[in-house]
Image (cartoon, rainbow, N blue to C red):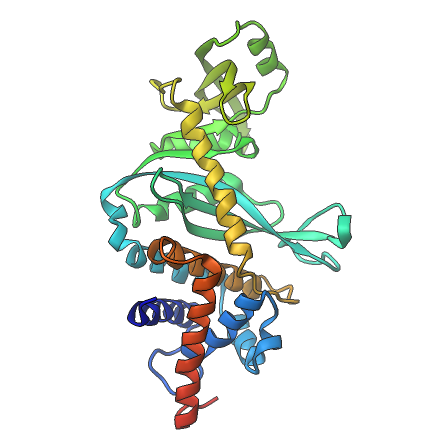
Length: 353
């Protein structure tokens, strides 16, 4: 791999850390340049920062003196720069949303730890809402935020989409699974003039409608809805696309599909293929798991910083290296180059704590 390109990738991670933690650039004092070594070594080994280095206390103190918003801003400010060669600012892109989680073992005494069943000792989970670009020639985790217990899902989605304008020229379609089927979200997206496609849960009215259809039939039905917000009745509508017993060539089975969309002329011949693009994000989450940095901290600032750092590593690999090397090989090489740079500086004796 090209050394100059690896150095540029390390600078991106360095600047992310410095901006997240309000550390100075180009300084002999500890900064993202030095913390990269411990963070990358921990990512390679899927272990704790304190296991591989001696600067974990300093790093965690810097994170705990920062804020979640600072990490959000730093992560998002990196994306326009690293995606510039892909010319996303000139393209219409499909975006997929999903929540991903990190297991937690211990007492759930934080509003950031969602309850869980206790299976395999997992007592709770940290949750992150991720927006990913999932066009046919691109699958990129673009931005993630931590999501607390009792989260405002429509507000979280809307906030991320407002920021996405700095990355993409235009949003072609936003994809959601059934967990996002919400009147509040559909109303918010239509108010933002953002086209959406949401997989609809099969409740009784949906089942009844499907039951009245013939094998292979497709149709769109206007669905009006209402709900109360702050004591006032709010009304809206969406289009429900019903597809009865459609053959899936991958599984060789027939399935019923129902989607909600605010695109009135949605092509029902293409709608399933468009939605399936959302499944690419599962691959992204599995790749990020390969560089998981462990921590025992309950502090959401620590958890989110490490998650965002991992996601940025994956984004850099996908944009600049994935056609050349595997993710793990890239990670090992990046860590090795980083260690050499930091060790050379340490031998010169120019670093101060």
